[in-house]
Image (cartoon, rainbow, N blue to C red; front, side, top):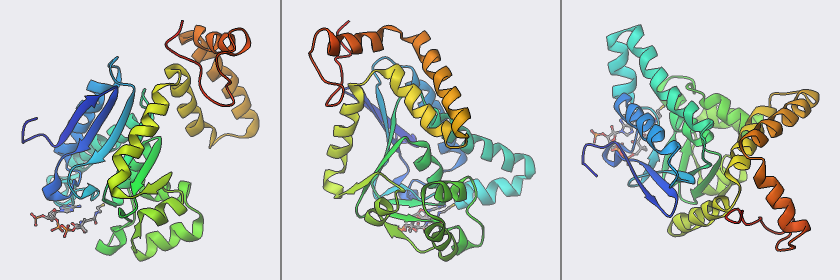
Length: 273
Ligand code: COA
């Protein structure tokens, strides 16, 4: 990997380990990093040897949020058009990640501030080190939590906690982030990669078409009425069937006819056709 790469990745056993790779700047997101991240996401998304994507950070940070110098001050100096272009680039890869073809896991190894909440939310699952630090630091330097951060905290965390977090700029650690459900769970840093690998391996055994459909509907139905959701879920399953109508039939067969597994206890063998 070349030194100038702001995003690093390697693929091991069908897991793409993608890293913010700017440790000397605590992995804060500059326009250049955002552009590289979009390229890496595009490169990996439809590769057959990638089944799960994990996003982590090199060094002691996950991401210290937006780059105050290169993303804010320098683009503002170039004018409104440059600001909008920088926003499109950042929001663009977060959106790409929210609707990514493969399941995604945020492996939060350290600092996670402000704009970092965008990619944190974009990942389907999030596992943090107990010692990771989360903060909406925007208020500390005089702005509101933009770039989706306010939406993220109010979507995931009850209003009183969200309000306190946003107004005081007080940080929480990984354990508290797990209590608040900002992340799924927190584990000691020394066990973080092992735990994430374990979860990734569970996902790798599932039907990939069903996984993509599932992650999308979980995000989509949040804003729907019950009736709209019910109707949408019928259509979404039928659409998934048009990509893979055999998988679920195989799943039924392995339970009902072959009796090789129980869906209540584990997954059907997706390798067997
Ligand atoms: N934007 C721009 N530069 C940043 C940055 C950010 N968000 N976060 C860290 N850096 C830079 C620092 O300016 C410093 O650069 P320098 O070596 O050229 O002086 C370098 O990264 C190391 O940061 P430093 O503050 O010395 O590291 P630390 O380990 O003592 O502290 C943090 C880590 C994350 C607590 C601290 O860097 C920080 O508060 N960063 C800003 C976090 C923030 O408010 N993000 C929200 C943006 S929306």
